Length: 266
Image (cartoon, rainbow, N blue to C red; front, side, top):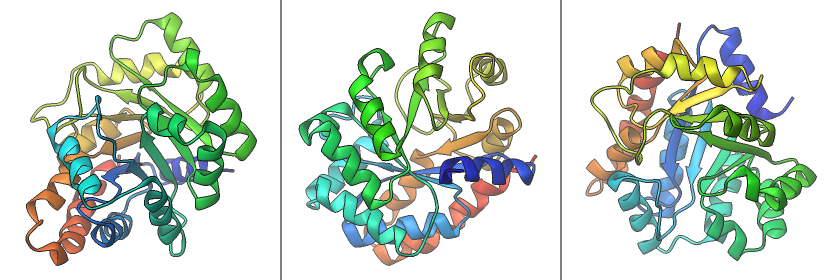
């Protein structure tokens, strides 16, 4: 059983949803980013979603755009992102999923990129702007190297397309609960339970829900309906709020993660 499958199975055995934390690699610098990853793991993260910084993150709102900008300005590179993963792997077996864009995969060579990611310790690949119809090369390379593929379902995804997405995914399905970009929202999108139920008609894979989830109460509401809950901007904001006191990033993130992850219990 893969690390991703173990994480979802372990959460299910404890009658809760898996907590998935998103952080941008290298935000605000390599050492602080490593401390942040350690903190969210210590706080109870089941799966770590690492954003690969990109200069044109079209699916991200201002919070994650600025995180990527901070990372790039600090000198983060593709090689340093892999080094970050290797450093995490020295002390943790938490599943790691890359949240990236196809340009970054293609520019480094699909086969070489996926082989290097897997060798570093990455478990899954979520390529935001790569539709399953165009993902043949990525899927084949991922299968060869044991990297799982994650694809997105949107509220507007029709059944015919949902079937194609389900057939292409191997790790889990990421349901984007609202149209638009990432970011903290005061209220959850409507219809999450019905959407998750519809996705489950097409696949036995776990369904994780993200975009706009930022409080323990919201985590609890989603956890009652899905297999996993993704929180990103609410955690990235902790980094933003402590840029002038970077030693505080780790402790603050661990506490915030623990509070949010507590909401996954059913």
